[in-house]
Image 1: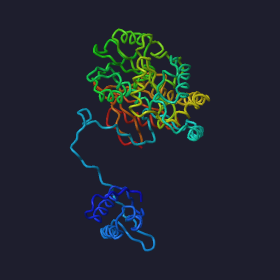
Image 2: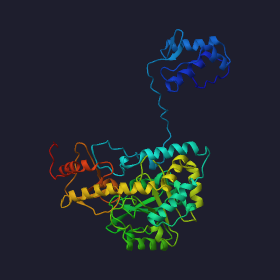
Image 3: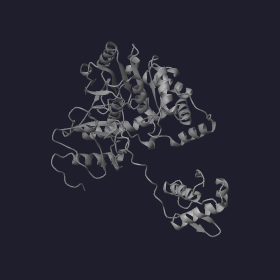
Image 4: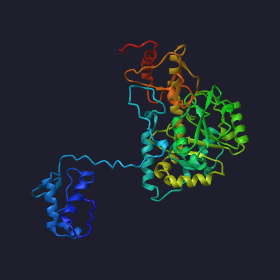
Length: 463
C-alpha cells in the first residue's frame, strides 16, 4: 500500500486512520484485494501505537471494507467499490462552453463510410514498431525544443518542399500534436477577443468551434466549384481559414484564379490566410496545384499539415510553417501549451521520412484509395438522387442529394450527412462518404444499402 496518510494533532488518532483509509477505498486509491501493511509497520510509519492502528483496522473489518486472512494479512474487501464522484460544485464555465458537447463517435458498422479514417491495414506497422522501439532506447530523457525534434523538422521541410513545393527550412517548421493543435496555437497568437475569422461554408466544424472558443466571431463564407468566394469574405475579417487542395468536405480544389484572388485580398486587407493542406498527399491522376504558401510573396500564409490521415490517427503529429515574423510567438505558445510533442515518435517519424518509407507508403495507399474512389464514383454515376461531387484526391467523396430525398438509417451502414458541416447557411442535402474504413469488397453492398436508404418514400426493412 502506498497511500499517504497524514495525522493532524493528537485527537482521536484511530478515527483519523479509519477515515483516511476509508476515503482511499471509496476513491479507488486502494483497490479490491489489495493488501494493507501490518499494523506494526503502519504504526511505525505514523509514529503512533500499534493498538491505535488495530482499532482502525477492526472498525473497517466490521464495516465490511477490510477482511482479515489468518496468516496472510489484512486486505481490502473483495467486493468491488465504485469510486466516489467529484463534488458537483457551483463553478460554471464561460457562456461559450455551456451546451457545447464533444462529437460522439459513431458506432462501428460493417459498411463504414465515416470520414477521416485511414485504413490501418495499409500502414507498415511492424516497421513503425521497430523504429519506435529503437528511439525509445536511444532518445534522450530530457525536454525537447518547443519547436520540435530538429531532425524531424529538417525531414518535413525536405518532404513538403519536394512533394508540395512549400518554401520552408527546418527553422520554419514547428511540430504540433496534430493539425488541431496547430490551429489552436495560431488562434492563441493572432485572435483578439471579438475578432472576425472567416471559414469555409460548408467546412471543418472543429476549426469553427475552436476559433469561437478563443473569442472570435466566426463568419461562414460560401464555397462554389472554384473554392471560397473571396468577394463574400466579410470586410472585418483579418483571418481566413481554408482547405484549398481538397476542400473539406466537398472535395473540390481551389482554382488558380481563386487562389490569386485570395492572396490579393489578404495583402490588401493585411490579413492572414491559414492554409490547411487537408488530404493533399493522396492525389489521383492530375498534377496537384501549388499551395497558397508557395505562391505567397507577402508573408500572409500559415501552412498547416498533419500525419494523422497520411499514417495513423493515433500518431498525433502535425506541423505548421509560418512567416518568420510569427515564429517566436508560436514557439512560446507551444511551450506554454505542452512544451513539446512526444520525442520518440518524432524521432521515429524522422527516420520513416528519411529512409523513404513515407513516400513508399503514400504511393501504396494512394493506389488503393484511388481504386476505392473510382469504384464509388462509377457505381453512383448516373444516379440522379445521389450525385457525386467531382474530386481527385483525399479519403472521401461528397454526394449531393436531390431535393426531397433523405438518407435514413440502415443496418450496418455508417454515413455522415453534409448538413453536419454547415454552420450558418441552410443545411445542404447530401452525404459525405469516407472510404478509408471500408474495403473494396464491401463497397458495392454498402452503396446498395445507401441507395435503398435514400429512397424518397419510406423504405422497407433491408434484407
